[in-house]
Length: 146
Image (spheres, rainbow, N blue to C red):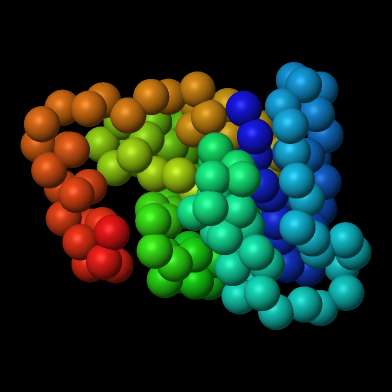
């Protein structure tokens, strides 16, 4: 499994904790920044991670900013991306089972323990493939010309 990860300054600390956990699990990770708490523009990081996922260089993406909202909005502008802002294990599971989400976004203030659980469930949950969910994901793709 290959994961692209990124944050702005507001998600830097959480990204560092998640990055450590992913590496402990021997998951291949590409870090798209930020690399400190110095201010950066979250759209730049979201596009970088989103392109890796859309181009198949990564199976999944994980993005963090102060709220997770800006990253989610930006990533969802890219064709082929289905980014989901999740603040619970249940939402992470449902975003994968029902929406085949390929990027997880989280608020930077999420506790590392909770975020680690959310990430684990997001990465381990498979898309259900149920007809109604498959049909809906196809409709989403048609909006971006895929």
